[in-house]
Image (cartoon, helix red, strand yellow):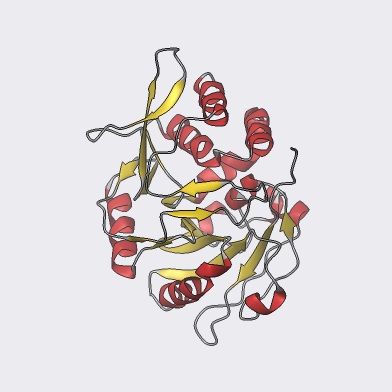
Length: 276
């Protein structure tokens, strides 16, 4: 059954006298490189946190984490991308929206005029990473010159007997890190969003409603020539099994912190990206 992809609303968190109120541009402006700040003027010593929110049950944690991050000297601002359009307005009363919406999973990687740093943290709302781990991960990323990006969640892939890509259990190696928590250069947001040769790949992500994290790994690895850095564990994950709030298909479940069973979407996307 065909279904519409989630729309992403950019919701700046409100912190009086803590961080500036940041509003997103309209979608055409966001996609226009001319609307973005000069890369040479971006700060390298601080970062912006981009949180991808979906679950209303996680709003209390989201408030707490955003408030904790916003007062950290390392963090310039916290931007929340809310992807659950069924959330009632009262539940989001402490967040402000400019009304922008994006019907694409690729929207989480859009470069925005509000991003004034050379480094961003891409973060899902179903994990809890304390500020010490955030600072440590940023330090690890900065110390690994040339590293494409750093993350806390890794996945390993292999070929099955029919030469199809699958998730595999390898405790001594990994092939990608997930966008659940990822520190990366703002430059990769631009490349992911603007490179013409990625047009079909981005369309595939939209069509399959999946695997934008895999595409970002391919983009960063191809551009940098090196793989991502896995930072040591030390975080809290919210319930391991839950209905995915951004996918209206009935019965769809997400297994968190466990290898996903191979499905046709992952196999198709890995196979396609592998020859890109």
